[in-house]
Amino acid sequence: MSVDVYFNFNGNCREAVEFYAQVFETEVRQMMTFGESPPNPEYQLPEEAKNLVMHARLSIHGSNVMFSDVFPGMPFILGNNITLALVIEDEEQLRAAFAKLQEGGKVEMELQETFWSKCYGSLVDKFGIHWQFNLGTGEQ
Image 1 (cartoon, rainbow, N blue to C red):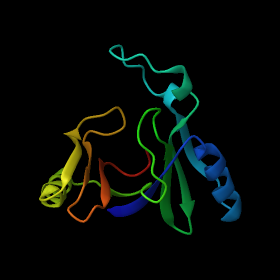
Image 2 (tube, helix red, strand yellow):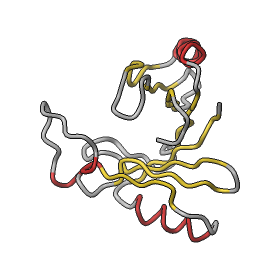
Image 3 (cartoon, rainbow, N blue to C red):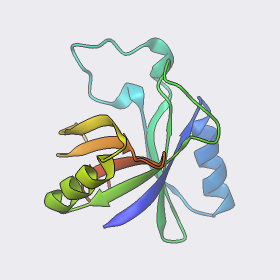
Image 4 (spheres, rainbow, N blue to C red):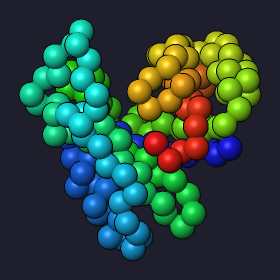
């Protein structure tokens, strides 16, 4: 189990990832654009989203640091672009933490299966902290 930091950027994620990889002398472990994700027949991906980074990951001195661009049309507020990501193998523990943190907070995405995880969701807790929950190894 780990709690990882997740940074959002407003169209310059690739530049940020490459910069941090150079600064911390590490390799980009993963980078996927929105255009590389499996197509959704119910939703046409906007052209301006295709080359934006959907997910990237670096290992910085033993910590997973994850990155993405915000999707076009989604709000981006500098200073509020950091999320904590709970990455865990035990679905029961993940669901329990989600249930407790949603009390007094706001669920952004209910726990559900996605193409990268059997169980993923997000919320803002009662203190205004943004959380992502991901069932898996963190290797996605």
